[in-house]
Structures are given as structure tokens and as C-alpha cells.
Length: 261
Image (cartoon, rainbow, N blue to C red; front, top):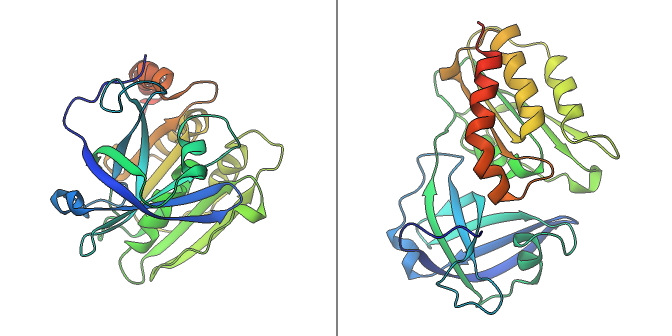
């Protein structure tokens, strides 16, 4: 059953659409309603986008999908949201591929919890396409000269993006081809030589590889939870309703299995 919004939605409008890569579309939204938004404290700000069901009033029983705020420009005001598009599958991707300036855009939020710590000795960023907008925002939000190791897995070289940062960042793009999502990421992080000093880590994406890396960072590397922002954005074989309905139990099981340090 589609999610029902718990509070009034913000009514924005699409102002432009950009094709970033063959499978990534940026939808930029604006409107006076955005002036009431409070954002900017986190680099992983997210919103709940409300998509109307066909044949149903768009204020009733919308389908909800969660997306990262790629960039927030309050002075305009303007918000960027990047969508992964895989043909006609799903709800949000096809909508983004067909979006036009003037289209309505309804959402709730934003929420958020992570921003790069200014006191960390270095930063670890790791994720798949779903985490790319947040990783890009984190790189832009890094303290000047901060030491960063970033690992980003995408389907192939044409899905890479130019990322901006004033940090001392080593950005590694991983092209999985026909391999399982997350395999290259797990291998890359496990094979990485960590710099000295406390790390602040951001690891997000498909839940299975996130589980693997969480265990490695907690058990093998003995990194305290307070230095980790780590969670599954999605899980193979489940839509958002299915993942959200099982996510709490999944996370509880992961914690029981891994909290041995």
C-alpha cells in the first residue's frame, strides 16, 4: 500500500531538468514555498517525494519515494534532486525522465543526520549510485584540505560525474559491469590502507553490501558507532514500501550479529 503523508507537503515546481549521465537525471525545483524550508546543516538531507497514483487525486494516497537533496540554494530558492533512471521500471525514475519545467513537485522534509566532522583526521565515503548525490554533497561540504578517501560504484565509466571539493580527496570510481552491486565496493574498502587517526565514515547504498562493510568497520577496524553514518538506502528485490517495512528488523538483526567489539 502506498505511504500516506503524515504532515502537509511542500508544493514546489520543476524549473529545469538536466541529463547528467545516461542513467542519472537532475530535477531542479523552486517556488516561493521553498523559502520556508530549513536545510543546510547536513550533507545527507533527504526529502520524501510524493508521486500521485494514476486516476487518484494527487493529494490522496500518493506513492512516496525518498531522495537526497543534492544541493540546496536558499537564496534563489532552489533544490536539486538527482534520480537514477533505468528505463520504464519503477516510479520515480520514469517520472524524472519525463519531467518538464512547470510540473508540480510535492514533498515532505527535509530530514538529515550527517555532515563531515571538522575534527576527524580523515574521512571515508563509500556508496553506489543511490548514495552518489550525498557523497557529492559531502565532498563539497568538507573542510578545506580535509583528507578523504571516496569509493563510488557505478555501472560503467559513462556514469562517472565531475565532483567538486576543496578537500584533499582521493576519489576512486568502481565500474561493476555485470558484477553484483556492492562487490567492488566491499573489496575496495577492505583493501584500502587507512590513514592514521580517527575516521568519520559515510557508507550508504544497497543494504547487503552495507551490512558487510558495517561488520568490517565495526569488528575488524574497531571504529566506534559515533564515527559512522552507515545504513542501507535500499535492498535488492524490494521496492521502498517493502524495504521500509522490513528495515527495522533487518537493522536489529545486523546489530545483534555485529556488535561484538
